Image (cartoon, rainbow, N blue to C red; front, side, top):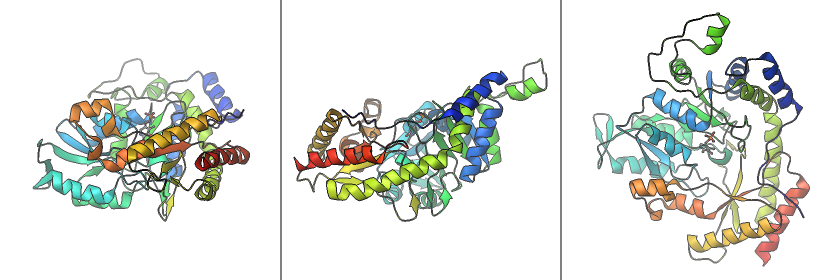
Amino acid sequence: MRNIPVFVPYFDEEEQNLIAQSLKSGWIVQGPMVAEFERAVAAYEGVANAVAVTSCTTALHLALIAMGLESRHDVLVPSYTFVATANAVEYVDATPVLVDVRTDTYCIDAAFLDGFIDKRYANESGIWRNRETGKELFGIIPVGLFGLCADIPAINQIAARHNLKVLEDNACALGAHINGVHEGAFGNPTCLSFHARKSITTGEGGMVLTDDPVLADKMCKLRSHSASLSEHSRHKNHSFLMPSHNELGYNYRMTDIQGAMGVAQMRKFDTILEKKRALAARYDSALPTHAPGLIPQATPKGYYHTYQSYVVMVDYKTLGYNSVEEGSAYRNRLMAYLEERGISTRQGTHAIHMLGYYQKKYGYKPDDLPGAYACDKLCIALPMYARLTNDEQDYVVEVIAEWVKK
Ligand SMILES: *Cc1c(COP(=O)(O)O)cnc(C)c1O
């Protein structure tokens, strides 16, 4: 029987060699390898500064603090994203206000956003104040989901019109671009993830990219206890005394072992991307004939998708079902059938407004954000990784087709 996982990271000897080099050097905490990894990602994305941290979750937290988020603020967050996007806002006692997503791209619905701000917030001499809670609207965190950029040009326009900051959560979208402009190069700080499930990995890891040198400097200090001197420069200068700490800082440093792995991963990132994009093109052409009830994530014109995941949505109406819930039951039966035939799949991601913590704290109901609810209930991530063979992929499509015919 076949055993096709939903995802497998892509390594070879290069990762082992560079990690060994880091171990042999004796310097394993944040140092030269992390610096090299930061330079490689910044150069790839066309952004001036990169600040490596322990995860995308801590990247979001760090960036939000450095950008000035405080407990008096609201931040607009799409409901259909991994829970960490909203949690980062909760960490500073600010309020993540959830907004809806499109059911074709699964990313923030810019049209929804514009009307939503005017409805929920009153403009008091340039400050948009929540009509119910009195909180100030700080900004927006658009998410580049599954490797596709959100509609950043439209979101930037809305933000400029309302005097809001934008922080991009591109945990899944390293290398994605719109008409050649990479995520991270739209003038907004951007957070990346190097968790094992993302496009490239350092086990756990994250990074903030920004063109703003002042913001980058602030984040470099905050990630290392707000020490006035980094450990590596202190070591190099044979300094005996401890530096000063003038602000509340954190330990969000990436290790040099992870940095070494990141350097190796960046060297093969284009190869990984090419292989995955070729596989995505094969799914794109096979699914409409073999599984007309499964609609792949839409890639708008000019958008370059990097396929961290290949996600499809059950088109329940075409399949003759009357509700999202019936469509969802169909999806779950399909995923169970694939599992029986040796094919792993996963729910795309979850709708935050359906999670216990957020429901309890804010009283969300499914219908409050119907787009995100539908994505939560109807999406499936199919197997997608660089070493997936055409033969294995054909088997996946074949088994889906078998199920559809039943
Ligand atoms: C994976 C993911 C995160 C969290 O990344 P970590 O590095 O695991 O903290 C945040 N946002 C999105 C959209 C993600 O997919």
